[in-house]
Length: 243
Image (cartoon, rainbow, N blue to C red):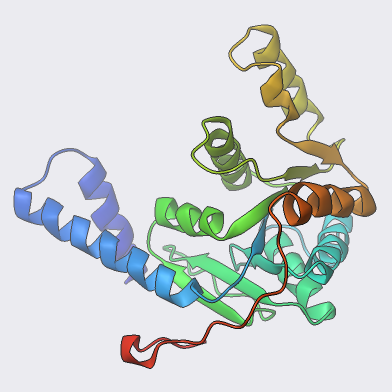
């Protein structure tokens, strides 16, 4: 099934298909997105944590992510991740450690990526671009842990949306100064060549200090956007919604 989905996307991206096939792809994409909206509708304000799926439980980055997620969950946020293993698992686990809500937005791959065991709820998406929409839609802050192509893709997606005012100026925090040093150096190169502005370099915080990151989110998200406890929204039975 997953291999078929991947082949379908590859064929579509190869170039124009028949109008019927393109219409079918459009409706399948729309239905997939609606399923994602319905599945995540009652999350409340989230913090999305990006990070590699490859780090194991005994790695320092795993422990850092777990502790940080726990502190962010204490602020009242739902912790949202890609739902997979590694640092995604660590983030979801950190939320569960302190009794916070833990949610995943998983991706269907040729080699199945199973949801990690620390999720209260998760949804499956067929395509990465739809998954990124959901990871951004519900979040009031973005945390970037060490990772690979996917993590950097998600980081720059969020940063671009903030830079171009497609979403509000939510806080972005990068953990791992040493790990990201070359990336930060390249950002300085872009600043030097004026492909980004000086102000763009102020759109994120770089730190290894969980307390500093927590206070940054409290100031730039909780206080700035007036987040506070609100009455529980009830599912609408006639829409077949589930809490």
